[in-house]
View 1 (cartoon, rainbow, N blue to C red):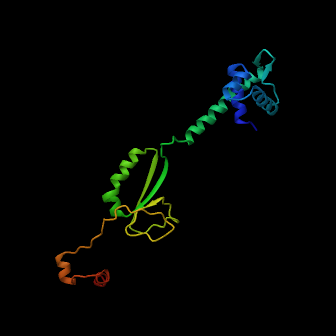
View 2: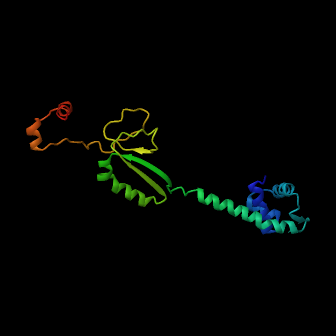
View 3: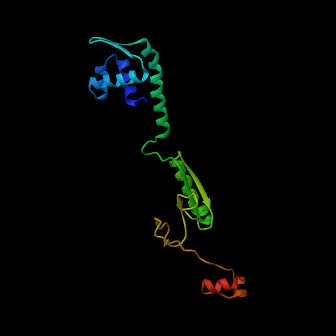
Length: 190
């Protein structure tokens, strides 16, 4: 099979008309370029260059094959451009689970701003008040209320001073009384 470096050296030697110039450009010795060309010629079972001590020219077979070698290199480069991202570009899919009220009331605007800063990133937001199992569900980040006692997660407090408050109307309190604990509240709901 072809070595990428050998293909590159063939194309550059053909363009420069010299093994020495192609070697210099690649930071190699002329003998290394000559060996690369020889490997290609062996694989292809043709001579690519007619060479003497003073001249280098493509053979008819080399001229025929040069555009294909160039196209292979161009295609590989285009493929690399498609899959590689600049160091500062975030891309791919980020799946985030968030409680419904927190997501709608606080985080939706932040997610929108984040998405504008990272247009190559796709966000999938899962608004749910059910506890997400990040190992079973396809979730990368999960926002949750309360403390995380699971040592297998990395967690950071987002809003440590944000407290949930239970409220009731005066009519409800008149009917059920004023519970002092969650257990008392739970017993009034049965």
